[in-house]
Amino acid sequence: MFSTSDTIVAVATPPGRGAVGMVRMSGAQAVPIIQRLTGRDLFQPRRATLCRLVLSGEDALADEVLVTSFPGPDSYTGEDVIEIAGHGSPLLLASIVRAACHAGARLADPGEFTLRSVVLGKRDLVQAEAVADLVDAVTPAQARAAFEQLDGVLSAAIGRVEARLFEVRAALEASLDFPDEGYHFITPEAVRLGLGDVEAHIGRLLSTAAGGRVIREGALVVLAGAPNAGKSSLFNALAQAPRAIVTAVPGTTRDVLTEQLVLDGMSVTLVDTAGDRVSPDAIEQEGVARARQAARAASVVLVVIDGSRPLSSDDDTVLLASAGQPRLVVVNKCDEARQVIRAWAEDEEIVVSARTGEGLDGLRAALVQRLGLRSAMHPGSDPLVTNVRHVQCLERAQDAVVRAAEAAGVGSGAGMSSGEGVPEEFIVADIDEAQRCLQEVTGARSSDDVLAYVFSRFCLGK
Image (cartoon, rainbow, N blue to C red):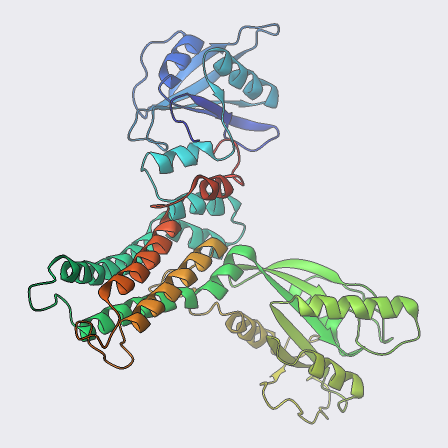
């Protein structure tokens, strides 16, 4: 399905005009094609050469470009790669691509350059996906997590887990190969320790998934509360801009209002909502319905309580509706006299004043911790798992390891050779399944459908 026998070409810079634009070619004919387009025979590897391109055709356009040659296998794809940096006119870049196609190349499919790098062994599937994540990164945390995976940190961690599985499997298979030796090459206790170690390592990786996905995809934080609790004032204070209308009239906010912000290096969508109360007003009823819908989809709900007055039935309604969801209870208006009597024993209240800014730093810190990001952002912690596909593969691997441990009878300490336990063949089958799942993460075993899905979201020039 994936052929690397032809030469591909594409614009590698974003659409639109700019000072510089780049066209990338990869394949066996990349060097001959640029030789024909420039009239030059020699290009020194990894050194930019100033050339004049004369593009034949109806318009016969010309441009001065810098051509850089990256001979394979020491290139991005592992093939001969040519990068042509010219002026960033879409017309000129399109003309260069057309000229290359007329000279024997074809237009690359989305992500095909990176796909070739995987097929030719320059990087694994985790690293390839990290390329797209790094291109898409809009916050420091996203860029840091993507580069860590591009650097092979997650792949190395998965490789260590698989190597430990292989040790156990090899010993079990040796027992199968020499059934008449009178002893086995691994004891049930060693199987227990080995599989327990593997399960613990997979568990640690999966424990980073919640925070990792928030870093990669962003978090949705919804402010909910009774009318006039100060949600819009808190929204403006966190957004550091007067985005929401603030008045003393309850029910001012009628619709959801969103603002993008970066919190401790991660992307957060902050949502202000209508005050939750029973109202005869049809417009306000719709606003309340939308507020409740947004709260149900939130990564974290900020339940805002007016700290200057006693709890109301509307406060009770919001606290009850958000029970069981990830939430923080925020007592606002601490600069005024507090009369609130606590009624949410499971939550630690965060006291703030949206008007003066008191307590906002503590709220931001608590929000980062509630989203599961504090440990994820510390250097030296376990590699972050940020991708849903990786999570699914790791969960399947963990299930297979658990089945293998149960088949070995590790819970009762049963011996494998005495007939009290399950034969080694069954344990080996589950270990093999776990290894396949781990290899699917890195692409050591990936179907064409998986590869097509992964690379479908890449741009043409990658």
